[in-house]
Image (cartoon, rainbow, N blue to C red; front, side, top):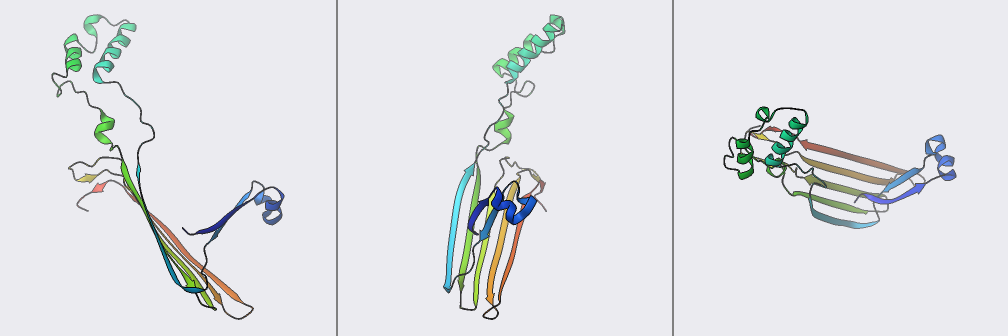
Length: 197
């Protein structure tokens, strides 16, 4: 929302202007400037959803116990000394005692399937013959993918970013122009803290 144009310089055109520092190419970004006329206000808002691109798949408790016992058999452990007894295997298979022999899908338990993301921006531009201005204010909010439970801690890693930019073009005299740019970007990451404070 703040960019007017961007261009890519490469090869001789980049090294001619930027020397050795431009040997790999240069990207030139030009931000928007004020224009002659009444103040013009533009606003934009977008809403999106984010999800994990890929999560590992884990075996359930019954399959894990079977494979563990098989690995011990391959190492020469006797049948009566295997880690998981036939009773434990049956309890995992039937889920008859979920407290002692649980089968928890931790990815589904801890992570939300989707998280919100929103972005808002307001631009103001205008100017007179002597002073032209452009101002932009933007906000990005991203919710985390961790579920929050009833506890004293908020484990949801969220992120908020605030952008501010002002470009002023002032014609001091007919031969002198002054350009001023003020900008800031602040990112705030919500890390686990107590909900009390």
